[in-house]
Length: 147
Image 1: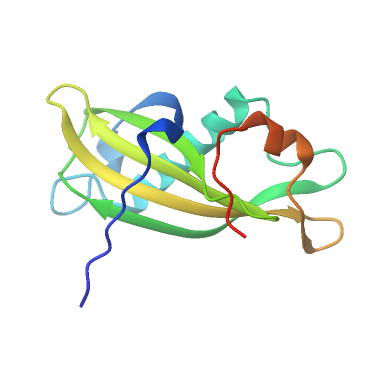
Image 2: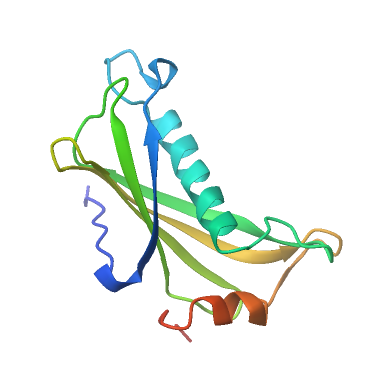
């Protein structure tokens, strides 16, 4: 089976935050579990959007919905490890794009994981995908566009 490879442009990372691996994030193999990593990625995404003044759901019912998630693991993380989540955006299209993540452990410089979360804008009142709001587009003027 072919392995998934994730590589992202360095210049697209525009936010970072630290999260600590909790004891409850540890699985039976005594390292950070996949389910907990997904939760940490979701927390980093929420912090990223908040830092840029982007609400999860606007007054008109339009919000961001995750369409896919790809994660590759490079190193184990353990309880009480401080992890650095670098977050960026790329590959915009009419309806959404990708949020990218580089997760490392500053204590030793280890790259722990890379991840990509696809998203689209969705109007929850109308129950349909809607075009990316202009306000979101202009917040990230350097992001590449796909047709």
